[in-house]
Length: 137
Image: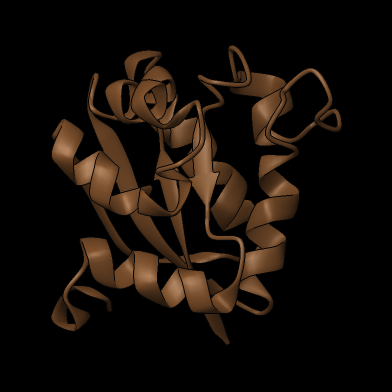
């Protein structure tokens, strides 16, 4: 049983499709162990995406992620990291497989609807960034 972090990004929250995205996870045997809707500050986004600090898109990413509410979730299930990444589709929605979250709901490579941890190690770090252990049920 693995845990991974998922974020429904500001573009998807603004489009009022939280339930449609959550249904994708639950319909594919990922259980929501924790969930909350929050608004990140630019500083919060900078800390969370610190790994990308030297990349040219870092400031735009932080600006975007703090532009509106997000929904952060801990997903739990067998091979949760890989399953979530499969359900999300590739970062660029134009290249994402039909039926994936990004192919169906993302606006662009920047406003791509969702974030998901890329490894178990990063999942642990990302989950701890947003949730106390007592919040994960």
